[in-house]
Image 1 (spheres, rainbow, N blue to C red):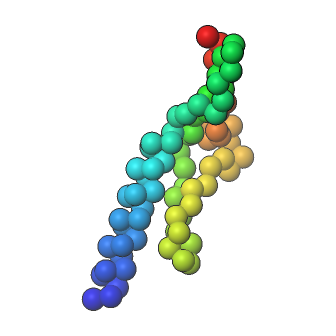
Image 2 (image 1 turned 90 degrees about the vertical axis):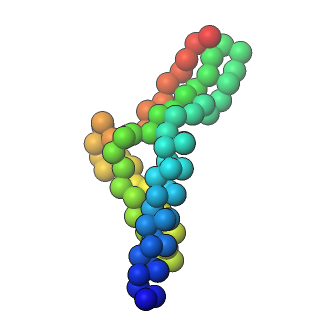
Length: 75
């Protein structure tokens, strides 16, 4: 029974981490007088749980299409 509950908790944690990632996918780092710096996270990512059941997301893997993108938007 404990194994079933443990798997259910891990699934909830994974779902929560994916929801947070979607919420942080695009954002503004800094706003200034002439524009703002915007970031965009990639669609492909690797979600992992460590031994303490903490979720972390890996990006990049030396692929240019799987990197965080930064833009300067002029007002």
